Length: 440
Image (cartoon, rainbow, N blue to C red; front, top):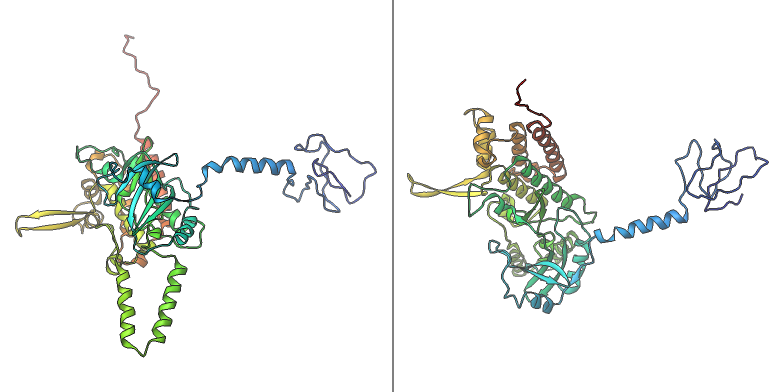
């Protein structure tokens, strides 16, 4: 039976009717008649029955869907740009412009590039990339898009350096927010809820990097630290910097390239097994590739030993940042011991273990209240603080196999954020109360 695809027509009953219904003039409305309960043949128009799920889309609906998708195009990441080095040089006044941050070890400049307000980071290659290889890696990495990750717009190559171009985000890095050099007693993160907001954003950003990019490669951030996290106002949301830098600088190679290289080395070693000098040369050249960079206090034990960054080393660095949020202290501190006449290293991980497992010295609540940042003015839920501390200590476990996956960590942090929200609402001053001082 031929029907009009642009107008809704009910399917025919198993017993054919003697009357033919005219198609409705309004294609997006149901027919006024009672729907039939069964159908004898498929239809190309809008149709439904008691055992069906609904309607079929018409061409009008498809057009509206395409329109709605195109309206969201501006929210998706742009195609990566391969900038000419002359563009970078001109935008930064031949790199003579004032650097954006003097506290960072990585040179960076804020400038206008192709009409966009950007930040340019200069990094040195660990493994040199050709332009075609760079374009391929950029196209893969720039497909990722998350609200808590600063967008990578493109890159440029000059000699042994790569210039990574990120969008500019107005805010302050987490290290400066926690440790104000001008006034050590002041912090913008003066409430428990603001710090849990930062922890939640960071956990979900890292969970996205590890598990939810939708790519066929395992991405490792390798630059998780408090100075690489931007806190924005007014809601104190956190955004992660340097996404994709490890892959583009050659610190971390894609799995397929690493596997191919290992296979190539195995073949070479087998072919040259009769020459011990050749085998020694191969192992010696491979050892040079173990050069790595890291920030003291954020490097996991296995990363310090082998120089190989993994997702588990990212989890370790996240745990350190989480402890920083709780205490406001640096990961490592050195204090002078008058008795020994030497400097003694104090780790935030060791103080956290003592706070939750003090060996019977006092109560957990008492130790936590002394350990948590005093600038919070003792206003925080102790039970939630203990749970957050234990999550952080799980993340910094010495054995990488015993560290949790970031997906599980993000779920726990989100749950603790909700508990913190309930606690914050419960301690608010009551509103809507009027007081009259007039004589009765």
